[in-house]
Image (cartoon, rainbow, N blue to C red; front, side):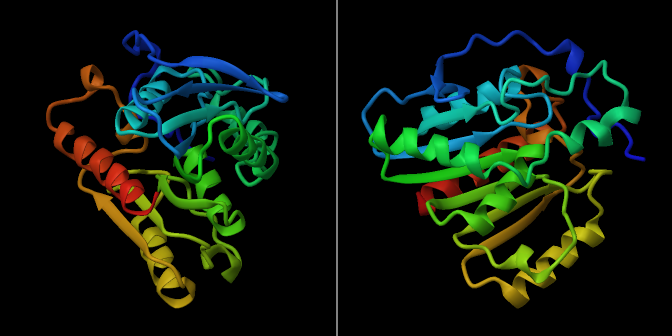
Length: 244
């Protein structure tokens, strides 16, 4: 049974005034934020279990837009209820069965089409957190249209060698104290990527950090974690800038 993976209290999030707006794309709702100048580069942000409306994830979308990308976070849960901090962990695995991060291909295609046709995007990357980190890992194995990916503390699914043949450069970010992902799993991932991966990849573990650390807004950070959070974020942005 999985313990509560979020060690921060999601009930007391500070209010966040978003810079972007919501759009309807075919059957999906999405949150979009654009930079102040026109660009043909875009980044898809894959949300965690708390869904596309969670303030922390919108903060990341706005952050990516601030770095010059058309940034979009689609509702990968397709209008169904996200996980909330008051739900019971006993129900989590059932909830996950209906919210499979490996079943995001159709939604990714809808968003890619929108970015290309409506926004003029020519290069598109993806970053994802936790549930979204798992979705990123999956999509970087399947979708060659995604030029680069950053998977932040997506739980590692151990199965076939197919999990390691990434199509484009992918960066994996983990927290050292994440009790949903053991360091053994991280080392195994590194081992397997060395063996099977033909494109640039990177794995980095941030000291003392728990699951969910990198999407905290500045006012919600603990001073001792702040340098690692900021480092993870700038590493994420550098990776995207290098390849997208």
